[in-house]
Image 1 (spheres, rainbow, N blue to C red):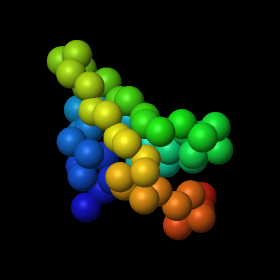
Image 2: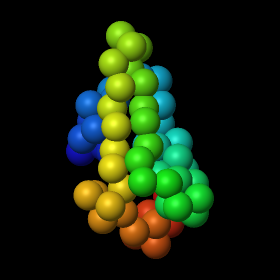
Image 3: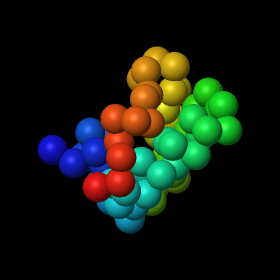
Length: 61
């Protein structure tokens, strides 16, 4: 299953690599959350501490 399917961003026009890049950037900038916008205007908000995001798990694919 693709990352964008797990996050329910299939129709958002964003690739898995773009999602990973945004998560890495947020982690590097010490942000607590990342927001993604669906085409219908609703937001998907990921709280990085809750996800336990480790950027080393997602090296360039």
